[in-house]
Image 1: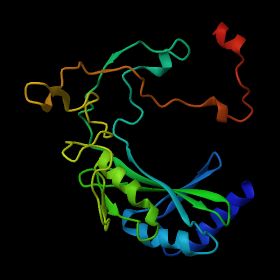
Image 2: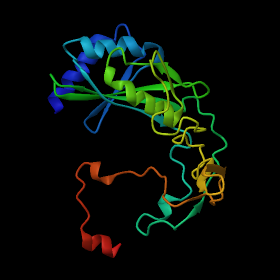
Image 3: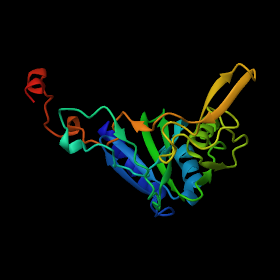
Length: 235
């Protein structure tokens, strides 16, 4: 694995460093992540696929990310490392969402010839999250991009059929955005008198039952040994 990653970084340096100086990559936990400016996405992606030193012939996933309120939580993880969290907490509004790079699109690429993976990340304008479609390079990205549009409201220039794929066609909003209400915008039920499904304002109290925190995983620390069940019981 280490040798393959060394070869990958060397190939990235040879093919991108001169003409695409703004592209940066990091290597953490045996994974290489390449950050590409959105204006350079398509030419970089073509190089990643076509050049034999890279050969990323498969795009195995495309997903959106909303970094608003990243690392924040209704719970304080430091105060409850072993005892868990309370059963409910008031949902914060996150009204101060004005991050310069709130949205990102993440592409996971696979090179069969070199048996290596690469993560490509593109940050977008929070007010108008739009990026070029990679369908002309990997046709299989079709439904991935539609899902990112449906869930995050990210637009993909050049996509031939950019429409919702998981929600209803008349659905309002994008459910995976951090400012989307946890209980949704409306609730639906079947009205026997009208003989059809009707939409009404949400009556459920908005509360968070699952902690949304970013916690450090000790399993990846060098020399760290797993904690036994006896040690966990002793706290």
